[in-house]
Image 1 (spheres, rainbow, N blue to C red):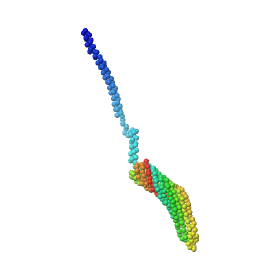
Image 2 (tube, one colour; image 1 turned 45 degrees about the vertical axis):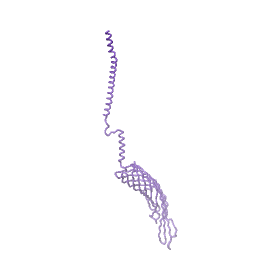
Image 3 (cartoon, one colour; image 1 turned 135 degrees about the vertical axis):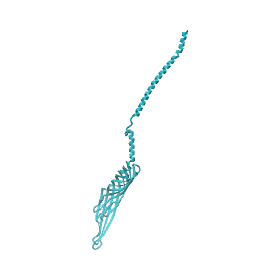
Image 4 (spheres, helix red, strand yellow; image 1 turned 180 degrees about the vertical axis):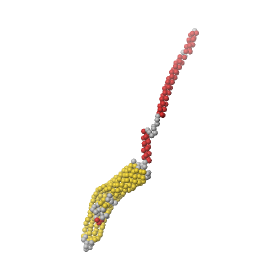
Length: 309
């Protein structure tokens, strides 16, 4: 009976301890797994820290060596700064012009009796053209070159009569010269130099150069002679004779000189407006027979628009 009681007592104490032992084993296993995970996490953190240190210790770009993106930005900035600080009137430009022309071309009266006598007509018209040029600026001084070409709608017509009389040997001599001249200038071109003074927004200059122009002319001149007897020794019968006559129609390209002055004002850095006066003088031309050398010239005032780059 005692033995039976002892067995019951042992069972009473031992049996409840079995589940507790199982729970303890599970806890220990879980702790071991957590330690393993913690060690793996520490290794990952150490690897990340090593990469960060390597990146921090990487050498910086050497002085004067920039990345491509930095070089592009610096190039754009440098170009913009150079454009802003370059002299305003150092530029290449192209532009348009239009204006009016006035002049008085001369023609000779033919004949020995009227040697050196001339008559002139009114030359009028409009012009439209284009120009291209280059200027260089140093301080306030600007010099440059320019080429221009114009379509000229310029015409002239001149008519005149001149009389000359004298008495000799009981005869009365009458001479009358009649002249008619027309001219057309369909186009002109010029190569010019320019020089002047400038501020940041204005440019005042003188200009001069060589010009060529197409000149179409028609010219007719007559000298009439009438001799009338006024005394017993006179021989004139009062009839009129043509003693000099000429009809010429010519078309030629004439070379001459051009000079003037102008003003230009900058609206923006790349756009300017201006005005210019020019005097054009073509070479002398002769009319025969016994004609005087005469000058063909005119004055032009133009408004101009230039785009520079």
